[in-house]
Length: 374
Image (cartoon, rainbow, N blue to C red; front, side, top):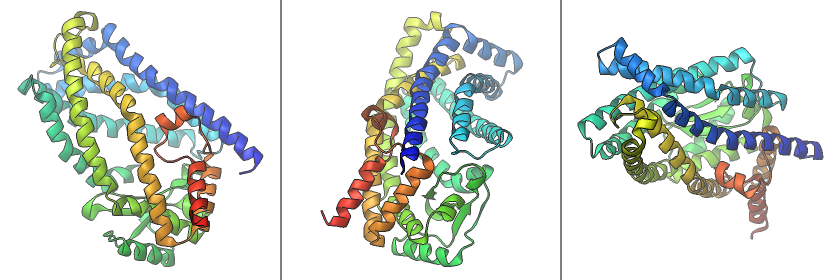
């Protein structure tokens, strides 16, 4: 990167980091205020007055809560979009960006509707052990979502087509065959209409596994660089990182739901009057649950990011061994940094809370050491 690119990456990263560290407590404040100001209770009464069926009450309550939440967080999302446009990361028009935002809203709403409907049924059915039942059901639900993500959800945002470059597809599929990844096609996705960033990934589970290349990656990287990137993504499949992630999720969600249940019970018994919440099984208690889980997820993010960075480093090493092309690895990471304006060496606090990948400096040092045989 030249001096101007380094300057831009520092500027862009500082703004994005600031937005992250401001938006997180802002979200917590929103949940707190919606409770003490009685908005959550008002939504619940509104839903009860509209329908006598619990499932419709949940749908109505969740719609107004989701709508208000999105309106409150919208300024942060819009600022982030405008900054990405200003630094030539995003290529989306405002109308296209809003279309994706609306799609996000409805996908998240429908997913949350299923989760919250089942969750509060469990709270009423098992007042003391609802968290354990919720934990048991969360695992098959998460696997189901991973299964349908590539074929039902992802196409809502982009068009996926078979890779046009059949020579490149054959080379990628040959690598996939050596890695025992069950795939007959490589897909490309039209991300250039939205971003200048580069990416590739292997998604899905079982028969729904997909190898996907962003068209920006195809247009900006050489064939050798693309093959290295694909080898890196295949490493996650080979090293069972998806299943390790599921195992960690089992552990974190078990203790997280247990802590959330204990804290909800304590807070509603002690401060239910101030929060306008009568009992845990009331829909109006949902912001309490969301506040607790958001804080817990932020608290464990340094550890989960550490695990992710370790897995990414393993994937880098696997890709080097598979392609035996350190030069392509170094140049591809340099281009990723240049195009995405990635901060080469971020502050430690930013790395701990935001980076699920090693920093570019760490990756390049590791690759150069490997090239020297160290």
